[in-house]
Every structure is written in structure tokens, then in C-alpha cells.
Image (cartoon, rainbow, N blue to C red; front, side, top):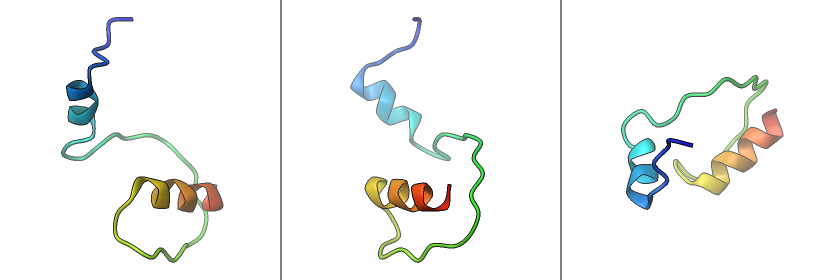
Length: 48
């Protein structure tokens, strides 16, 4: 309701330490790169 949904606000949200959330991940997953939203999402879904 009172949240700023502008592009600038969304970019600011992920600067610095990013966004914290709770999750249970079990195991290890080898990744092909150091960064990437899709890469991270795929890896987390495998370990979830």
C-alpha cells in the first residue's frame, strides 16, 4: 500500500547487502558463474 514501486526504489532495494529472507537449503550446487538472477534462482530451486 504505502510502498514506493518506482524503478529507482526497486533498484535501491537490491543495493548493498541486498534483501534478506529465510530459506532452508540443503546441499551444494556447482554454478557456472559468480552472478546472475536466473542462475541463483535455478540453484536455489534445486536445493529447496
